[in-house]
Length: 186
Image 1 (cartoon, one colour):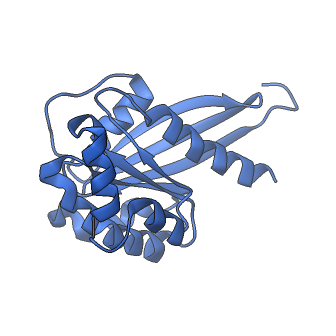
Image 2 (cartoon, one colour; image 1 turned 90 degrees about the vertical axis):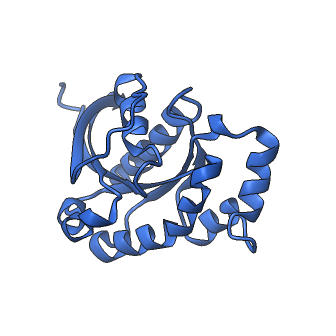
């Protein structure tokens, strides 16, 4: 690394209900692979990923935190030092109610992390056709849509993702990482 290049380190916490695809999203971003079989995260999983922005090395420490209620008491420890977070919910028809818990995850983040950049990922869009996806976004909680919710709660963005196909995954993570980087370098 030259004298002008710098290294930046960011911890990104990924949270959401169990089974919404947090682990598969992280694996898709960090390795390009898709894990077909569901294996519940026990406590937390940790991944390291590096990329370059403007010639500077960015080291990402991605913490995939278990969403099951049984792990609630230990989650607060895993939030420590988070630079940013991703809240994941699922667009899969049988899991769409996972969006109803986004407020809970947001409250937890605010309590343990304060004011950090947060992205909202609507995952598993490969399991729903485009027309139904638009209906879901407009009527998830019957009186507001996801895009409006995202803006009202000052998320850095709402991203439609598929860990299976990779749709939106790289772009969503990179938006969050770039947001962190540019806030740090200002």
